[in-house]
Length: 285
Image 1 (cartoon, rainbow, N blue to C red):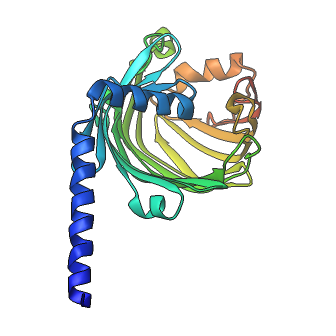
Image 2: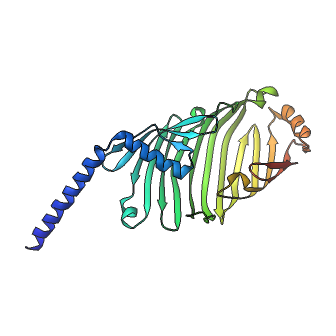
Image 3: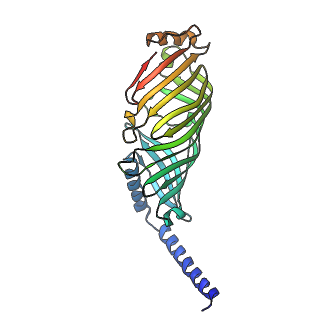
């Protein structure tokens, strides 16, 4: 048998295996596939995520319909996703996938990688229409505007994996917040023209870099958050926030700053020190 004949037979075998596997995936019962996917999500998210239905997508991807997030009292539907496994990662002994996510709020593309010791998440794009973003029923605020996020995060596998590294950027424009306490003090809304934030994470310490919030409230932040990966609410805060209200809202918010124990300067600006934990922050002026 010459070399060309050998390659032809190998090609026949690979083609047969491909279509056999494809046939098996397409004809796999949808109920069992959905149950298997929810089992995987249960382990990965500790019960926070689930899907209404899962189905195969040519050639080896999965379509996930109505992915929802458990917010305690509410189950918020985030949208639909297409998950495509990384064959290269599988052949090398690891795990990996690319995910395309979409919903009324916007869309996102990100990739997941996991090996024996480490894992990584890379957010290639995340664009959100905040006006269509689902908030829990007990949150009395309404949002408008657009936000974009890019970044990556790397960590260790296992219960002892507490080290995190990465970086990211957040940008927003035309942001509006209405309802809740704002109505109580006589404000129809807070409007922000731009938001930009750059952060880095090294050895599980998040450091805030260049940032700016401009609008009815102008603000800048600096400091760190010492992350606790397995108990996020216990992450330690050490932040300084500088806030300056605009002319439109100054008269209504300055009394609130004074009641909170802050001492506004002559231009109305204040500096807040935020310490404690994410679950129990301590704010002083």
